[in-house]
Image (tube, rainbow, N blue to C red; front, side):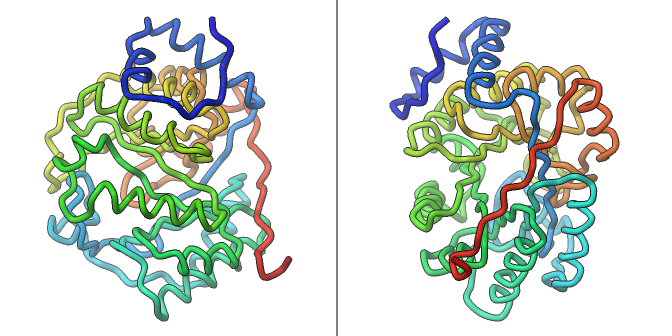
Length: 327
């Protein structure tokens, strides 16, 4: 078995070769990589809050928050006090990272963005890591968030460049890559992953991970989502993918991006207890923790902690940023 290395020369062909490995050999390689670069007994617990639900102008085929599908009503940005209450609940339950998502296509300067910046600063002051996902943004906007103490910004690529145009038509792949570059340039951690089960081929998964793994440095967090088929969206009848395909994607993400936190994200509730154990074995070391992820159900926190106790896994401690203006 080759020694795990941090490298940035991944091509789709090289990543495809990993997907083609026998399943148990792939898991062995992923586990060895995980143990070399991480404390294999620790898992990051992150909680995701929907601070501005529905009404998004995008046409992402999997998302019930898109206004055009009429699957949910648009709601206003939550009051800051409510967001802070949710952050405190998450912290008290053991989460080390609090993530806030708004159903926006892009960040617009103004009162609502000012409120989000204030939320970031106040959550950071609570002593936990802060992540936001707000859509596309400009360099001066990510700089404001960085100065408020933002730890990470989530902006997923979703799938391969080729398959992307079959899933989303209102934002280009290059738009997403540009946003990731703005995040990196501001010194904020990049959280970027994708979704499996969008009708893509294995080659598309290989190309997605090759795109992420060829970045230098790699994203610090890589969420691997499993499609949750939402009624009323174009993908509501998409066939369920085989669980081993999901586990393979986690394992390949771990091998290609050794230092990243690979996160079990949407779709985890559909996994059996045994499949969740396999995911940890394959190198996952972060989970979204709490009963809901934006619009999709998630395992109960007590259920997650019970499984972690059974496996001897402990939660990671938070590492909040020191706001730039406080330095």
